[in-house]
Image (cartoon, rainbow, N blue to C red):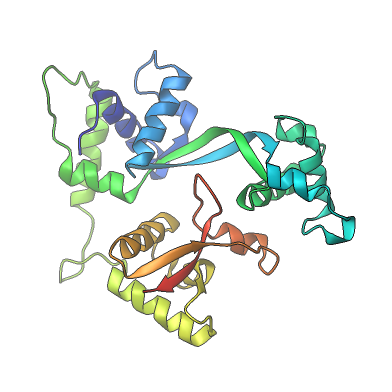
Length: 271
């Protein structure tokens, strides 16, 4: 995998931030980088799993299923009064979340996210709020990056210094006697999934929040997400989205793995 010089600078900028995380407005590869260019770089790197980011829905509009739902009798509606208010507000066109007049903002955000996941409204526009270097991104900078092509990278001393500091810090991290880091292996994570499923009686349909409660810490949320992606890629598990939200709390739903399209990945099925 190769990255462009401007993408490398974006990654190195993150190395100077606490936990390699920052508001996207603070991650400028060059002094003259425009916001639109910065957003594209972030999303291109995210597509390659080198960074992850949190996004805010800034514009919404009702989908055909959402509009059809409004024609049902009130008693038949599978949504809350606040959710109905949101769908009605954007029924005729694209609006900002604030124009739904639903308060407080936190409740509004939760309701909008739930409606998007159920396909009753869609996010017409999203704004990247924060970005962070993933475990995969760290591994890439440590072991895989190699300058290619013609010309110079034109790294500033500060960016080069952050890269060197990152490399030295990684080399000094303690390992166990067998050379394995303290985080549980994918094999142990798979065993934990099986043990939890058996103990909780979830019939091979384990909600992710149970696994987070068991493995975070020592794993971070990001580490566990990527471990689950690896297990799925190796055909050892399948991850599926939540369709009915009424049986779970907001916190439990938010423990899923958000996706750009559709609902969050919520259940783990051992293959």
